[in-house]
Length: 337
Ligand SMILES: NC(=O)c1ccc[n+]([C@@H]2O[C@H](COP(=O)([O-])OP(=O)(O)OC[C@H]3O[C@@H](n4cnc5c(N)ncnc54)[C@H](O)[C@@H]3O)[C@@H](O)[C@H]2O)c1
Image 1 (cartoon, rainbow, N blue to C red):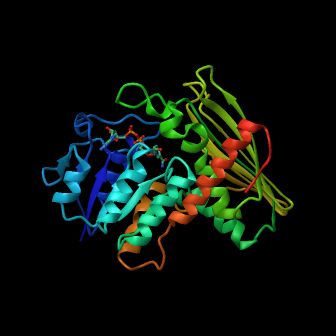
Image 2: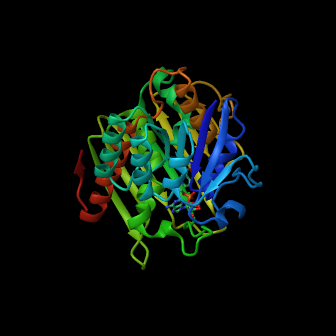
């Protein structure tokens, strides 16, 4: 039985709690949130599926992380806190040899990610970063398709992730719009695609990013060209969509022998347009990325997988690419990695 604590009971904390609490061989022993009102009020977010019930009496509630890790005998600490607190709490938990699942972005910049990697290297606990997009059905399917070579090489790939500005926390003004805390749209949202692009195509040689900024100074829309040999890879992300548009993510990948399109806004979310034959909807198992990433970490902890499913090094490299994208947007220059 793995004893788990979820730290930060906001939007993602409730999402992760709901998944852990359904898994066999797991007991959610504790939940921690410095704002105890969060324990009883439902969180606000841009996607559905987050836990909205009451915690059972058997789950202890803490307002203080240090007190919780001192008092509870835990196997796993799941960090779903605002981004600046990821390294703080992860380092403390790893120092106690606890296993840590930490929400993306791993930290605000690559230098801070390195501190977490050092702490993990000294610990008996393992660190995994929750890069959920790698686990969502369409994205896991696309990676397998690229690796299989079924439709030849990738000629071009374009990824989009478009949202209204995240103004939805319960705790007063949204911390997401403070770039010092969230890293802004290019880290908090666009990192999902940067990480996925690196996961599928490897490290790009260069990045070239353009951006638009809100009158209050925060970046509201970005577009990046990722430099690869003979393959055009681009991605746009936004916090500038109207509230009635709300949300869309997807990709269009041009292979030598087919085009593949995925769009969360469409009633046919994934379509394959082969060179020979008619367009069709590929069969794939429905997979919730949050559930799959948590199950993968649990499988690893139970000795069923050889390596940490999302290594902190790989997540750190994705944050390093975003650091370079931000620099490119600011300077107007291509940045070499
Ligand atoms: N993977 C995804 O798709 C996804 C989606 C949304 C958010 N996130 C990430 O998850 C993290 C959390 O985001 P969120 O939307 O849940 O934010 P949120 O504001 O809804 O929740 C954060 C919670 O942490 C609590 N908290 C703050 N300081 C604390 C402390 N010192 N000790 C204990 N609790 C504390 C807050 O009271 C709040 O309840 C962020 O890093 C964000 O980028 C990931």
